[in-house]
Amino acid sequence: MDVLTVILFSYLSGSIPFGLILTKFFDDRDIRNIGSGNIGATNVLRTGNKYLAALTLLLDILKGFIPVIITQQHFSELIQLSCLLAFLGHVFPIWLKFKGGKGVATYLGVLLALSVKLGFLFMFTWLIVSLIFKYSSVSSMFSSLTVFAVTLIKETTLQSIGSTIYTEEKIKLILFIFFILIIMTHKKNISNLKNKTEHKIKI
Image (tube, rainbow, N blue to C red; front, side, top):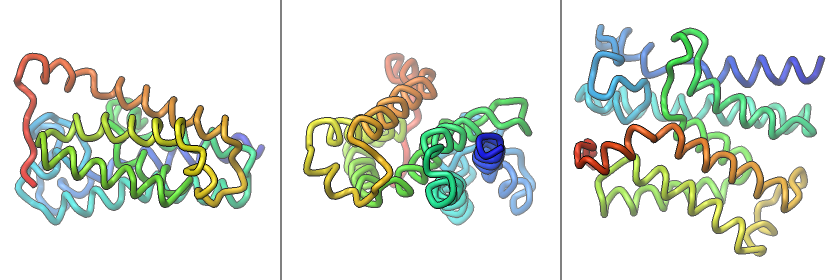
């Protein structure tokens, strides 16, 4: 019963398409017909409404953060399952025929629930790479790699996480899985980068 509860709550939380809901309600447009067609904050920014993009980003982070925090408190043995299901809910939402977003903001929410310090490492790396290269996709992939690499190499980082739930191997495993998943959700972006057709972001 606990497993089913965590699966449903984590997946359904992650599957809420905030980008679509907000642009439809406040802008009367379907975000899937704009820019890349993605439901995430980066594509919402292409509507020209920075406030909607910021709100989408915040809500997409929270829908990864909240279920993992709740699972951490009540079903700690199922924390990895909750992390994955919240992320997959965004990427494959049942409400949109399993066609969702890239999952980066939701991953950040999950990461912040696991470790605030690793979450800030991701955000700092994302911002620096974005300022240099101006590509959201490059920033996201490189930042997820950085978080995994730092956790893999630096034992002192693991000691500073402050969570009693994870062993070293478990946190390495979950971050490696997320890195692979983020690469997979950015396959089209990788192709666009090779063809020099990837859209740059304005920061």
